[in-house]
Amino acid sequence: MTTILTRPTWTTDLELEIFDKLLERYAPHLPKKRLEEPRPPQTDEEKENFYNFRVAGAAHDLFIVQVCAKIIDSFADLELQLFLSRQIGDDGAHAENTRLRAQAISGRNPIEDIQKQVQKHWDYMGDLPIRNWQGFLAFELHYELHIVALLFINSRTSKINDPDSAKFAAERILPDEAAHRLGVVDWWQRKFDRASPTEKKDLIAQVLEADEEGQRRRNPYLWEHWHLSHKAIGIEIDDLPVLYDAWRREVLSYFLDIPVSKLPRLVSVKD
Image (cartoon, rainbow, N blue to C red; front, side):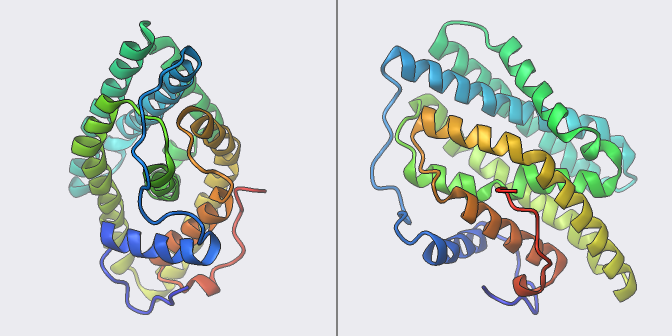
C-alpha cells in the first residue's frame, strides 16, 4: 500500500480512495458501487431479524454516548470537550431514531433489548474506554474509524433496509459520523504533532498497545455483529475479515505516521 511520508488531510474522499485500493487488492469481485436498491423487510422473520439489527445499532450509539459522558470532564482540552459534546448529542439522536424505527417495525418498545446490548459492549470492552486517554483513543478508533470498512460493504451490498431508516441515515447519520471521524483525527494530530521525536515514539507505543487490547476485546462482538448484519440485511461478509484488518492497518499507519509495511504484526479479527 501507499507509504505515508507526509500525511494528506483525512477526508471522506481519502477514505473512499483507500478502501477502493484495498478492494482491488483483496476482493476485486465486490462492487465499487451499489448494484441494486435494498427493499424493506417483508416476512415476519425478516422483520424480526431487522429489529435485532436495529437494536444492535441503537446499542452501539448509546454505548458511545455513555462512554463520552463518563470521560468528557477528564480532559482539560476545551476543543476536545466541544467535540465530545457534539458526539454525545449526535449519537444520542442516532440511537433514539433507531430505537423508534425498531419500535415501529416490531410494535414493541425495544429499550430493554437495547440496554442488554449496551451492557454487552461494556462487558467486552471493560474499563479500556475510560481508563486513560490511550484507552479512550483506542475506543474512538474502534467505534468510529476501524468500522468504516463495514460501512462501505454495507452501503454497496446490503439487500434489505427500512426506507425511513435509510432516509435518516443519509440526511443525518452519515454526515455526523464523518464529522466524528474527522474530530478524532484532529484531536490526535494536535497531540501528536506537537510532540518531540522521542515523545512520538512513546505515544506510538502507547496507542498501539491500547488499540491492540481494543481489538482483542472487540473480536467476539465483531463476528457476532457481522453475522447478524448478513442475516438481517444481506451484506456480503466473506471478505470482511481481510478487509477489516487491512483497513485498520491503514488507519493506524495514518495516525502514527508509519508506512503500512513498517507496522508490527497486529492482532487480527481472526485471532
